[in-house]
Length: 507
Image 1 (cartoon, rainbow, N blue to C red):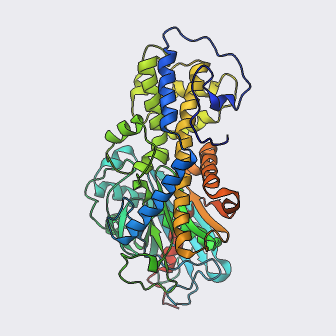
Image 2: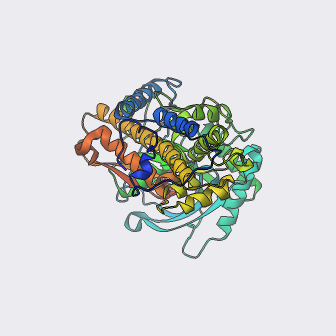
Image 3: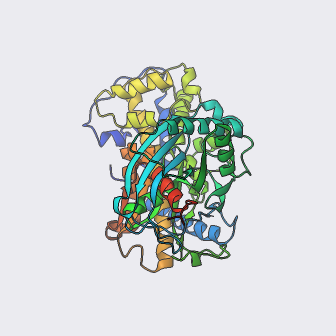
């Protein structure tokens, strides 16, 4: 569906999204208890408040670039923390081994731990040096119990170290640790951290629904190393990276046109390659390349976003009110919850699903983004799959017209999220373009994309791409390549662990 510059009018033929995908047909008779006018009013206001015409997208992109500059000037200069990653040399597979002037032939077994949100992944990567590159990889995903997201630091990290230890025990024959070496790990930690070196960083605050006590203000590498010792696991962290930084490093290994990485999953973040002389708050740099990766922590961005009363209510009831507004608008953890809140209001004031309000519909986060994605894919005339999701996840019975309204709500929220994410990407690219004087838009530039939301939600992905094209125009947007980098952050973390191995000077 083409993105429009204004929200559609809503009335007797208001269901524009569905009408564009289906032939016209008469709506089913409504239940007498439903107040069509109340539901219509809510939908009309929602679409108006969520509208992302080109001027709003332009304002968001410009504000993103301005906040980036302010955050680079000094710590606390803007909502964007613009954290230095200490990753100041990126190589492709051909010359990846040359860091800090050392010629090395990285070989051996390296591990990665990728802690992003509601689960963590563990990986092992066998490197074969310049000639064989990545020989083999193996990974496993472990869900994190809900109670551990609000537990103590020791409880969470002991659970993670235990899962890592079990994974290490299952090593196959094709993976081989070089003689005399200790296991080394690249730790992808996808929460705001003030990096103090390549292998240490202080947690600023939890996001994505985590509220683990005893960790903010501590070095997360020390927390993990201590937990591994308690589990009897002989391993050490050689590199600490954010998921976006890991994705950029992993994608750059195969394609040296990668300049930006964006994560769109449970949470969201972005990083990019920055010139060191464009970072006023960076006192000194040992980077021989003159560049470094900057972790924007763009989830905290908030300037000029089109917000609704439902966003404000959700934010007020969250564990971090007033924080991570961009993340709460565009990421997978929150899209389904915003839809649920809209449907609940439509039921309370307009009896969308009848006179009773099921407990499930009143339960926060009972409707998740994978559910709205599943409904969004429905193409049958009676929207049976939509009805099944509503019944199973929200506890409501629905007829065809109610299901169409639900899809309008889903499309409105997802359209806003995807287009705002696209505007954020353009803001990063335009900031880089201004500083490099034509070196970004003058050639092929790759944005490495990762995360379940981007990978699995085609409508979201299309809205994002539409926004980028609208902002840049057809000629420039053709040179900006959105490249899916599946599991890139884990591979990148292992590669950075190899690059920063304590054995790097050994022969």
